[in-house]
Length: 66
Image 1 (cartoon, helix red, strand yellow):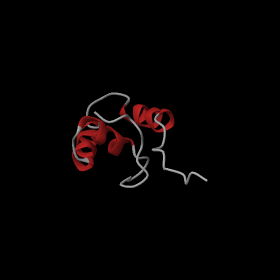
Image 2 (tube, rainbow, N blue to C red):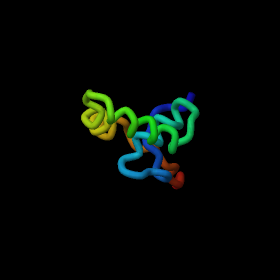
Image 3 (tube, rainbow, N blue to C red):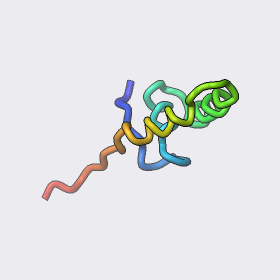
Image 4 (tube, rainbow, N blue to C red):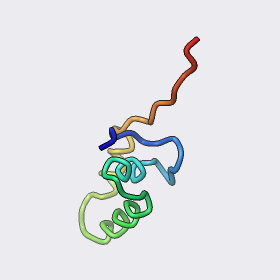
C-alpha cells in the first residue's frame, strides 16, 4: 500500500479521494462515487473530508539536488 498523501495531479477539490484511492488500490472515480453515496447517509462525512484535507500532507515533488 502506498503512503497516504494528496497527489498534485488528478485532484478534483482537495485530493482526498484521490489519496484514499491510491492508498487502497482503487480508482479515484470509484472513491468519489463512494463518498457521494455516503453523503446520503446521516453522519459527518463533510467534516471528515475537511479534516483529511487539512491533515493529509501534499505529495512531495523531487527537487533538483544542487
